Image 1: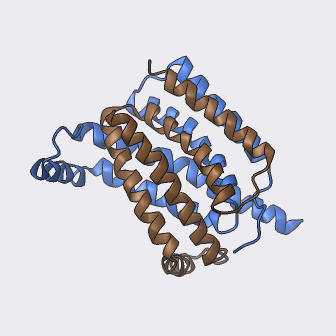
Image 2: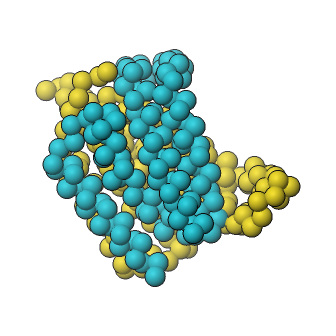
Length: 124
Length: 138
């Protein structure tokens, strides 16, 4: 039960956080200057977007849930199972970010999910 | 045409950083957390003790540094490529985490688990053949 709750937090808060960060980055604009000072300016610009803070907060929750899982399960089990976020991510990209997710991408995501299922079964 | 190949080159460079540093960070965090142990009590004093142990672990700090490197590469690539492209493409890191887990932590990767991770990589290959951008910047 504790493991299921921690995985839920990792997947839902992690995916939600990534979607918020992605939305913030679309607002902040494309990186054109890759020098350290340019990257710092870009990060500061991104931090002025509200979605970035929401995303970082949710990703922090996911991070501590991940720490909790890593304390009790193998890394080679925990990390692949977190790929369940692919299904949530594709749905979120379609409905939250309004990206056009092609049928080919959906097929790829489905194959990834089958792989995650095998990893889950490998624990039994 | 040149601009298009330039976009693909910098996209692949950022993805390469992501698929190395994310698994490395997770493996280091795993090593650190195994030494800390599971949280068995939710009392404030016990939790404070766990937080102190976490903060005192060099593996945790190295893991956080690796994940921060991953995060910067992730943010940069998201500024021009779609989330629905970047997230699946970065799942190559699942194969790398299995490799690092086996080599650095001595974890057992069973054939079924290896097959699952291989399928994840096939899914990544399918996704990787789609264009990196399908939307205009907001």
